[in-house]
View (cartoon, one colour):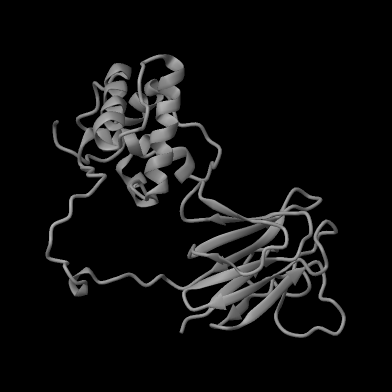
Amino acid sequence: METIIVQPSGPSRPGATGAGAPELLRLGPGDVAEFGRDRPGGRTGPFAALRDPGVSRRAGRLEAARDYWRLSNFSAGTAYVVENMENGGEYLTVAPGRLGAPVPFELSRVVLPALDGGTGFTVFAPQHTYLDERETPGATEQTAHPFALDVTAKYFLVLVALCEPRLRGVPDGAPPGAGDIARRLRPLDGCGGLTRSAVNYHIDYLARAKLPLDGDAGDGAGRTGAKRTRLASLALRYGLVREEHLALLPSRRRRGPSIYGPR
């Protein structure tokens, strides 16, 4: 079984050695490692040191469990945040005193409040195992997908542009406005004449037909902004738009490649 690798905060330059170099911890299924400011006296075993006076000496524990891992928070009053580094904006919070919270992310960043703003470590978990649909009972039966999206359609480009800030690691970033999206997509073939009104049409179509939003009504500016935010949140929550879809957008440095034919 593959190991779970833990990389505490520290110098990332290749070949870093000595006291300032982060030590990689490798944990197999069933292995345990603690983390904190300093290893308590008399304790042995893997330990991830977080050199900040704002971190408890014994802050928590990691437990490797096959293709996922668990996090325990030993703090009496401070929550820890686990960020999914492969999906900007996705995270979970481990409450004070919580033991054995399962973490499903393959690549995670654990953040602890610290005097310098934040410290923590990165966890690399094994690739997840997925069901082979060919071996699933009833796999030949057709099931209607609740979110049937055409990735070659212009409305999907609009949806990707809506999700771009969070996919690029801005967890609290507001979705871009219709005018911003139009300018972002115009370098693509077939989008040169895209207007703000056309983008709003695609957003309305997504909200009413493709990703129906409960209680969606009205066309005011405030409601339009809320609609963009809810569409982006829904698409990211269910993995309908992922990091690889950013390749559909134009390059930020030069005119994007021809992706679609005339539409």
